[in-house]
Structures are given as C-alpha cells and as structure tokens.
Amino acid sequence: MEFSGEGLFLSRLNRFTVLIDTGGEKLKCHLHDTGRIDHVLAPGRSAVLYRSVVGRLGRATQCDVVAGIDPSGVVVVLDSRVPNALFSKAYREVLGDPDAELIREPTLQGARLDFLVSGSQGLWAVEVKGVNLSDGGVGRFPNAPSQRALRHLEVLARLAREGVRPAMIFVALRGDINVFAPHRRVDQRFASLACSLRGVVGMIGVRVRIEIEEENRGGYVCVNYEGTAPFTCI
Image (tube, rainbow, N blue to C red):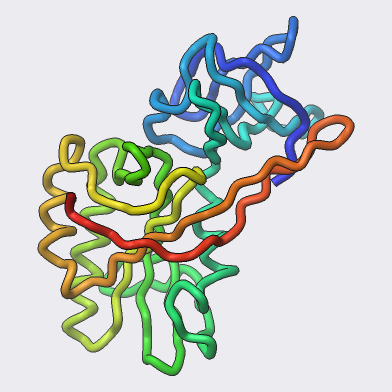
C-alpha cells in the first residue's frame, strides 16, 4: 500500500474521519477501519501513515489513513480491505489446497459471505476478519461487540450441516500477533459461540510480515503472508 507521508494523530472526529498534523498543517483523513482503534492511536503520541487524495471530486477529506504506529512502535494496518485482499492472494496456502479456485462474495443461507472456495477438498465457505489488537502476542477478536461476526458464525455452522466446509479466517493486521483468540471481555457471546463451534467451523489464524519501504516522498507499507497460526480459547 502506497503512502504519501507521516503525520501525528490528533483526534478521531467520527467513525470515518481522523485529524492529523503533518508538521504545521492539519489534515482530515478518511479511515477505512470503523472499529475501535484507541489501542493503536493515542492522541498526540501515535504516528499515522497517510495517502494524499487531494483533488478528487466529492471528497470531504484530503487523505486516506494507511496505517498507524502505536506508542510501542508497532506498525498496524488500518484499512479493513486488506484482510480480504491478503486472503485472496494466499488462500491456497491458508486452506492447504493448491487446486482451489476463488469466488467472491457469494450469498449463502441468505447471507453474503466473503468467499466461496472450490478445490480438491470440496467447497469452503469463508468469512475473513481483520485483527488489529495484540495482547502480548495474542490477537484478540473482536475489539468491539460484533453482531455481524456472530451472525456469520451462525451461517457458517448451518452450512457445515449441508456438507460445505466452513472457515472463519482471522488475519493479523500487525506483525506481533502469533496466535489468535476471542476477546471474551469485549464480546462474550461471540467468544462462547466461537469456542463451542471449533469442531464445526474451521478457525484459522493468519500471521503477516509488515515492512515499510521508504522512498523520497512517502513509500509503501508491504503486508505479506507469513503462515497460519492457531485459534485458541485462552
């Protein structure tokens, strides 16, 4: 992902907009992650990597947030489109099926899921979730109560009874996550259902390697597939 520069995070104006300081100039940036990010961005202490979009018609903001650098120095991707993009590149490795083919956004059981994957092991119904909260190396999901994630789990469980192989994929959005677990303190209902369905729905964590390649004016945030990781109920 290309970025234009780095700024200091000042505040979150609403779900979709943050205010940053680029060194004397304050910019309103669009945020593609509408979840809680207070564990990543601390006002006046966290940096933001942004991509300029000045001049585009219909835009109320001057830039897009690409990633944040939390107070401990860890780069955290803040674009909710990245998990699906990463899975669409690495799905054969993640599912262990080199012959698999991908169908995007199928409607199954009256719900739209992220992917349907057809391969030598049959059909996989896949829902992908991004994880940007690390608790000592444990990626916790969700970081806010999620009725949507709960509903997706219920749909995946029903599909299992029809012979489809269901999977919920948890993609790390930071490089310090090595194992995944439900965030029981935040969403007890999701945690209880996810743990009860571990033998029915495949729960697969995806580790990533995040690197910053700097150029003259900006650079790139490179997010690469590193391997799978267990989903536990710790």
